[in-house]
Length: 564
Ligand code: ADP
Image 1 (tube, helix red, strand yellow):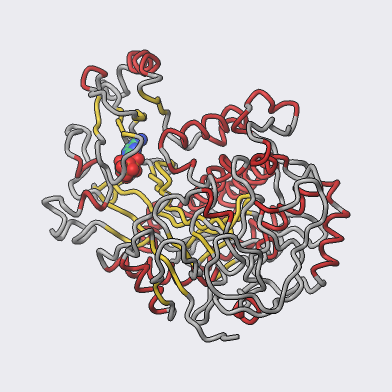
Image 2 (cartoon, rainbow, N blue to C red):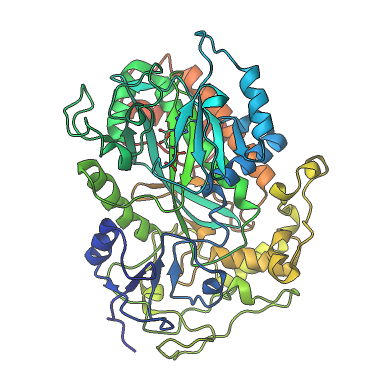
């Protein structure tokens, strides 16, 4: 047994990856994977695109992957818009945070009729639309138009109502890049990083020139090639990025308490977007998603969701990139319980933890299937492996979890199963809108063997599967997760259930919680905004206490706010 081997990280399929990620992994004392083909001596596999489904089936307790099966549905422009439309139909205006959108070529006729209906905006000009190819990124193939005759048709695309009056800083348009980590969808657990980036256009914004991308698109990959990128621009400085801390300071003077509210609304938007695909993702353990959410503020400070990125850029182009992304990655790995130095490739008999089977191998018929563990697993890659004992770090390095739940795991399990009747099953919202009034329902699976997870908590097997997904092979329990690790703040669930309950798994209930949260945040601003004059962390603390009180949440709940 050797507990000193380095933790091994694998990048994409060819061993190359973003510079900052490589740097952070090296700083943690990890070693890059040198294996070839079938060899599986790695602990973390980080891939820019999704993994083939077979990779999840052979995942061991000591191995982690940076994607969740089906976790990327919100990352394609067309499927994001479909999911949000569907949620809008079910849950109403709380889902009004994405600009109206048409899918081409399917909805061309609808777009034409909408264009003629909305011919003129208040200022007498035709409204502006933005055309975005669905399978492109970094601003490629995007153009703005006013009249349908100006639209060039080509590959499948979405056409969105353009947010014509964005909030400007010194005349420049900007959007916000927020980092979100989802270590599980069933039930949804989500953390958002407090720091983030603002990305500016590098020419001043005006609607009288809609064809200049440097005025209208805020992608930094595009703007760094712009003629005024390096120039020292009014207030913005040179380059095109700020940290969220800088944005807060710029907004607070002008917007006062409304500035606090906008971050709460952004938190709600992120959660609601994740909930839109939660029902369509199977339980999976040792996998996480790391998303980049793009949010645009309009001139009334309303946040709009523009896009969700599956593999947000991790390059270090400027000072702001390094300030934000480097600690963010370190703290991401801390959050996930991935060690600073030692390996996952040596084995030790871990504590007897129930539910340690992969979701793919769990007994579908409700027979308990706690994996029996042997003290001496063998090293090396085998194509068909049985479950192994826990690696050393999983036993010795505990992630920063709350320590108040000290019951033996078996005892906890019994309590959980005893109280299951109080929980509803998850609804398969995206697949059937018409079902909403009659309550949750189990979707009829096209492929029974793969789709049994859709049943929520309806069977003992699915209950075990859900709990399984919450309990990672390294000992991290997401149903007992911390409120915050470094600057990663848990945004869902708002509070942790007590140990007698399964975590919240019902989408309907989660949406209701978010809606209540937004209402309460608005009330806090209305009631305390006038009394609290200070514009600093004292005010944030007063608002946080007032929000907790309003929602009757304990210290388990934390407000997400960028640093001040
Ligand atoms: P990409 O995947 O190519 O980056 P996005 O959807 O993120 O495509 O759009 C690129 C940029 O265009 C955004 O960063 C934003 O500045 C601008 N943009 C996109 N959609 C809208 C919209 N509906 N209204 C205003 N600006 C938009």
